[in-house]
Image (cartoon, each protein chain N blue to C red):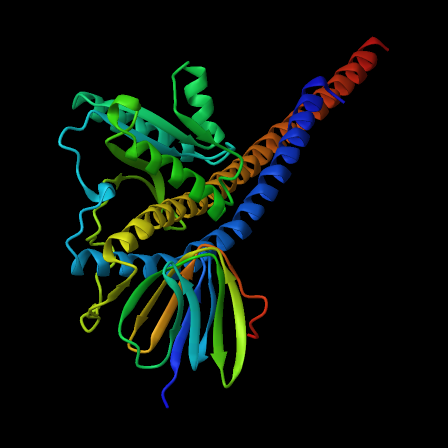
Length: 89
Length: 299
């Protein structure tokens, strides 16, 4: 199974980059889950946690509102401030 | 010790003290400019992601947004002038101010009213001294701007742009800042921030980098609504970071030449002091010789 390439970008730096099986984020319309093979998408995220699932374990990063783009299994989560202290490097 | 020699010695000591200060400032600026350049680089993934997203929305939807629409008649223009908080950076602040004066003159010549927004104590001082009015000021951070400040400035400028003319709103927003070309070269530059021109020649996409047909969540219009203010903020942040790097580079250069000048002065005064000492000795010898020969003649 293919995996997602995830990038977590804050205004002043790239916070995290890596592979994941699934990304869960909260958009303006509600919770959104992204699996490999998702159609290209641009969504506005609200303040809250973004969960990145790798091999069954979840890592959460708190963002203060931003957006997310999905394109060819590449997920870019962009927010002004990202607290990724819970994500193992 | 002769009076003249003492004066020279005093001068040498004072120039030496100044030299220590300028040397220290040069070294501090040199180490900070590296960090400032790094911050410019680190902010680029965010800017790139944002630019890509904005151009994706702009390409695949025909949404007109107030921030991208030109006003039919431009009557008032806001100008953001980015200078430094401190001096001792050569012509850094004055060249930005000069450039802004040129721009303001040009805008006035086109019959537009100009509202200045100032960043850095140097610009504020310039306006206060001349008793000119300005709309807002932000100071105290110019060598290390944070994203929060950029957001504050961005919100203020977008708000001014969105206000109708009658309520004091601006129809155009320009930024005057110093572009960091390289360590020896920084140029004052003007960009028109609003209305936005999204299709920009700054970073052309790669050949194989075709923008996919995105789905928008919740809708293209809302996505654009959320993205454009962020885009403005990101560009302001980039301007502030470049200005900070330029400020530090300019300060390093100015302090280096100040240190060199101090060395030159010390050398010159040392020579003069030596000359004065030598002259004094010569005079003493001739006095002794003169005195001795007078005694010999008398006996």
